[in-house]
Image 1 (cartoon, rainbow, N blue to C red):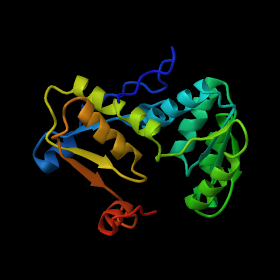
Image 2 (cartoon, rainbow, N blue to C red):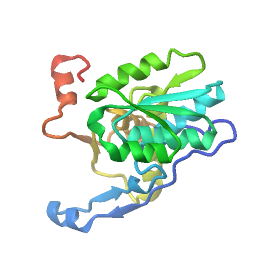
Image 3 (cartoon, rainbow, N blue to C red):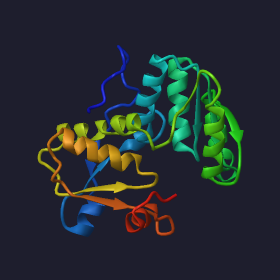
Amino acid sequence: MAAQPVGRQKPFHVVSPVLESLPLSKVVGIKVFMKLENVQPSGSFKIRGIGHHCQAAAKKGCRHFVCSSGGNAGLAAAFAARELGLPITVVVPSSSGPTPVRKLQDLGATVEVYGKVWDDANSRAQELAKTEGWVNIHPFDHPLVWEGHSSLVRELKDSLEAKPGVIVVAVGGGGLLAGVVAGLHQVGWQDVPIIAAETLFGLPLPTAISKRSVSD
């Protein structure tokens, strides 16, 4: 299902530009285009899905958002909360450092530093979300987040003159990948192959595939 504006609200994300990367095109010998999601209001693609989720939750009566994050997801949720006029608590691990904390506070978020890694922060966010009226905005594992991220592919179809030969997606939690897959089906590009790229020492996707189970 394509993401639609909630009620009469416009989505929080902007239509980001698609530009050819001349250095990458030169390296691989074909045209390589980049979708510049760094121009989004929160600084990353995450405002697409998280903004969509926040709007839906607010429409259903959410009184307080909570989100666990190492940075970008929390910034997206904090931006959306500010736009919606609702409070938000963002739980970050100590490994995040001071810069994300300061940026979150600048957006009006209450920041709680909890645990050493994201899993710790996520457990705390889930506990806080048991408070009446609070809604947990998961950074990547929610259908509304995937639905919001799918808007990226529809923009690609409007921007490109032809169907791409392949799409390369950075994979962390997998929310963007799920949204891209959904978007490809929505625009009839389901035959376009995807290359999922992960960092060398963070390989949850191939581990999960090999074990046929979810991997942190």
